[in-house]
Amino acid sequence: MSIIYIITISLVALAIFFNKYIHKYNIYLYILSIIVSIILYSSEANVVTFGYVGFSFMAVVMFTGVLENGKLRRKLVTVRAEYAIIGFILLLPHGIIYLVYVIEDVGFFNAPFHFYFGVLSLLVATPLAIISFPKIRKWISYKKWKTIQRFSYLFFALVALHLILLQNSRMWLYIALFMTYTLFRSYMFIQKKVVTSTKISS
Amino acid sequence: MKNKILLLILLIIGFFSFLKEPISDTFDTIAGATNQTYNVQIDGIAGASEEDEEDEEEHEDYEEDEE
Image (cartoon, rainbow over all chains, first blue to last red; front, side):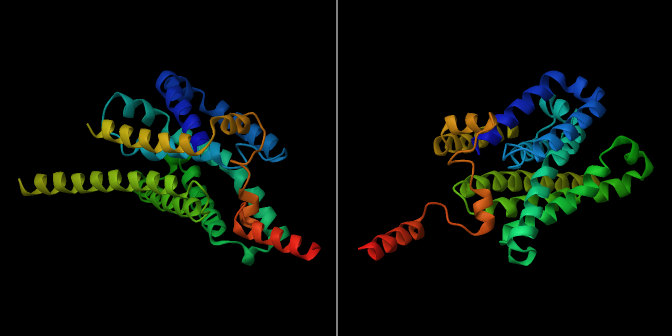
C-alpha cells in the first residue's frame, strides 16, 4: 500500500499547486490517460495494471469528500471530477486484464469472491465517470445528477470489499483506510442532519 | 481540527504500510519491475497460495518421495 500512498501524496501535491491547469487542460489529460492505459495494457504487469494508480486517484476523490471546508478542500474539489475520470480510465486496464484472464484461464464462475466485487465496482463506476464529464453533466438535471452520484458510495464499498477480500498482507491496512473514510463520512452525515433539523425547528 | 485528525490517522496507516512493505520494492514497481511485495494478484485469482505452509508441505512430500 505504500505505493498508493506515494502516488496519492503526489496527486494531492499536484492538485494543490496546479489545480487550475489540471481543470483547464482536462481534455488533454484524459487523452493522455487513455494513451497511457492502452500502452500499459499491452505491456507486462505494472503499477497501472495492478490497479494502484487508478485507486490512488479514487482515494483522493474519496477523501476529498470528508475534508473540512477550507483551502485544501477547495483546491481538491476543483480537480475532483478530473481525478475521478482519470482514475476510472486508469482502472480500466486493471479490470479488463483480470476479466480476460479469468474468462480465459480460470472460468468466470470459478473466480474468487473479490473478483466479482471488482467487476461490480467497475460496472458501477462507468455511469459515474460518464456523468462526471461537464458536457454530459449539463444534459441532466442537478437533482438527477446528484442521485446518480450517490452511487459513488456503493462504488467505494465495492472497491473496499474487492481489496479486503483479496486477503493479502495489506488487508488490515485497507480495512483501516476504509474504516476511517466510513467514520468520517458518517460523522459528516450526522452533522448535516443535525444542522438541517435545527434550521427546520428554528 | 477534523482535517488534522484525518491527516494523523492517514499518517499512522501510512507508517504501518511503509513498515510492512520495503520501500525498495515500491520504487522497483514504479520503475516497472515486479517483486515479492507487488506480484501476487494473478496468483491470488488463480487460487495459488503465497509462500504459505501448503508450499512447504508439498516440498516436504516431494522430499519424502525422493527418499
